[in-house]
Length: 279
Image (cartoon, rainbow, N blue to C red; front, side, top):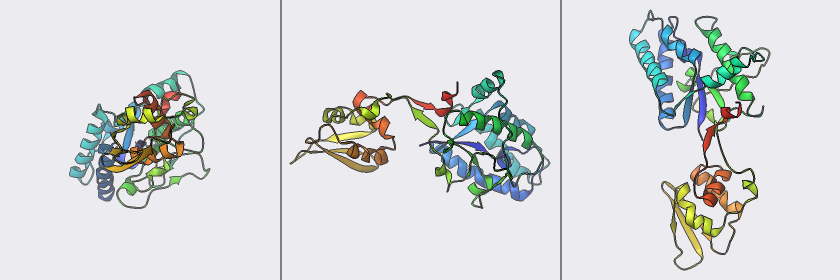
């Protein structure tokens, strides 16, 4: 599971001199975020507007060394070309080109004052929230706002939101699992009706990371997974009962629909960002 985050204004907006305490909090939060990014647990959102924040640093802060570290991190982050940075400009441009104006400015964290580029952040997040809600239910979020204070080990921020407008969850390393996976899989629509045969498992378990071991004395086969417990199935259960297949979800971290597709077809289905459903 991979979560999609937008950096909070505390981290991203250094267009005015912040206090040394705030800079220390940001630097600490960046360190924690970097670990999540390196482990592919988090991907970060990038847009033209958010990238412009990097060009507007105010270098009159009390601690120039900390500010330089923050600048270097953000610059390197928004220049990287790997999958950990998700450029969603095409979705924003689609919204603009279609003349869509139903979105509203996104609430801002309570720790943010009306200064710097906060209104730009709020407007951009409002567009992203509008796009987000076009491709998922109102009961879930696959995008969150990375809280500087939370990732630095302090209390997670809250929104200044007297009207209780819909807003992305503010998350840190402890509550990030309130989000759902930012990606979905291209699987057959009727995959829930299909069965997985014993032969499917024997032939294709390697696709989901398993290694098949033949039974020694009985009819039970064992599939080994590096770093995880083994999974056992019997030749007498054909097709494999779904309740047994569900055990593979925890072992492989793949959804059941992906496991069934991979075992039946012999390859992992294509993974795509949920925002692709918008356009």
